[in-house]
Image 1: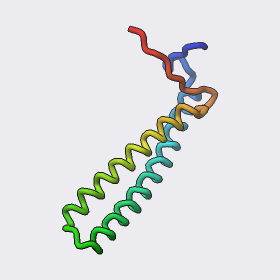
Image 2: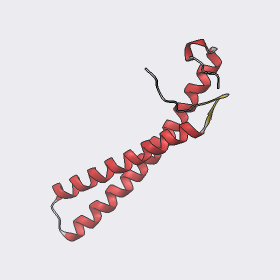
Image 3: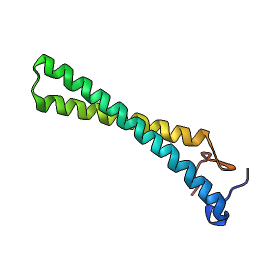
Length: 97
């Protein structure tokens, strides 16, 4: 495996890598937003029917949104590690001091 420093890459390769991060990040952000809104709406609706105070529903929906966001962050990192970014691929290696 050849270890490359990003400083040594040509501008076009740097742009391809940045573009790969960017468009995947936009898709993950949109997905997280939509799913979070749906989860929050469902929780709010169910809690309103049950007569639960609004502050409790807000707190529970917020926690559900936080869990949903963490899940989408995991998907984003996993997607980046399994994708090709231009002609490159990210790999995990142990960092030696």
